[in-house]
Length: 371
Image (cartoon, rainbow, N blue to C red; front, side):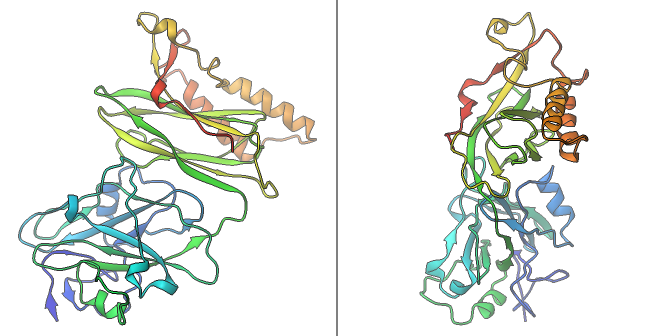
């Protein structure tokens, strides 16, 4: 046994920095598949939960977030960035022994490479932002992930070979390499995803409203969005929400966004069972901010209603008209969720007052192509 004095990645919990690591190598708690939403403060959360495996099931055909973390046993701080950054690969289990068949994940919300900065003498570090993965449905196989985290004096690079005959043995002897088998839930209905808006805040922090508008999207379709990069409070993410009105459905969230914040905002849509195409559907995300009557931009602004956002009372009336037309006589939980979202946007404590208007940040107002 030897001591690994670098950024150590475990193959199981309660493991110290000795190599080769004992036991199974295929369930590292330091490769963290986290699903389609991020925690509020990823850096704090994944450090605080270092003694836990907080990985989640992933969802096929949706934008999923993957994190890496490690503990630094060196006597100096380690900064893995640029060409020396952490690497993460995915592969089908059937191709795990063939590194030339692995696929590297490089996409991030900020469109910048990830980095990993870990303090010396037992400090714990988390990659700067999650890596993005949209896994396909998979049958009669499963996915695996392999991470490589550099440390001075150690070679944790992926072997330039056609085949690794003893993968588990190689991982066990490499303190900065980890392996995790990943479970992906196959999608059973029409599912659409992708990066839909690259948001740039600019040099001033501000209160921003992020909204989603669905046109000709069937009722009971599930929509959500989330930013890949942390920073705003609350995070830019709309939890999974069922479309409750037709032909138009609008909802959103308000966030405090720091200066110079930049991130892609990713969108997921899951159609109801039996829907195989959405030929006339259109989805739009808007980023807006509020101006009062004293602003020079006031004349160019629009009210929420002019932008298509109904008040809670208007949405309530639309929902009931459609329920009664369908022979139903009670609200469902997803209706309550939607009305709560609108109430939060229109509440008196919200920054926007009755006479204020919204300015659409034009370069961040993207209409998605017809689906």
